[in-house]
Image (cartoon, rainbow, N blue to C red; front, side, top):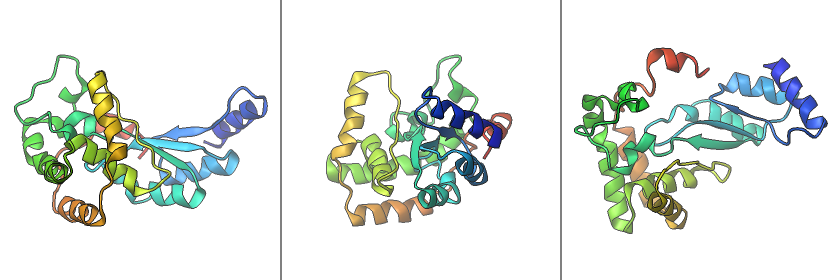
Length: 197
């Protein structure tokens, strides 16, 4: 990692690169890279159903003043409420390979979507907006990047910035989410090993 960070440092000094970031990096890797060339941001999957970064990555980023860019903040579409145990995916869709998207796992994980719907109903917001607003409430240096292929979904996602979750909403979300045991791995075992986490 030090060699890579050193190479990026040289590119920054030469004016060829502006910022340095990592993706799916463990806390130790972040520290090693940052010691050579300060990081601007780290990107990892993070949402209400993928909370692994909370244990070590987020505290490290806060300590080192590094931004965090969660990808898949809507759980590859699951947290939108548009996917359930009966949903099917097109041939070639990565979700067909992900254990968390097996029908039985989706059925078990529906409790999380139901929570988002309950909170959303009180605010006239969609589950996706609540999931994104929860992320935005975590820390000011956390900036999620939801993906979409539809303009109306982009507009829906932008609505999350206008949704201000009250303290009691956040307490309810945390308390209820703590009781939900997310079923299924976020990636197949071989792919998960490649993430470095």
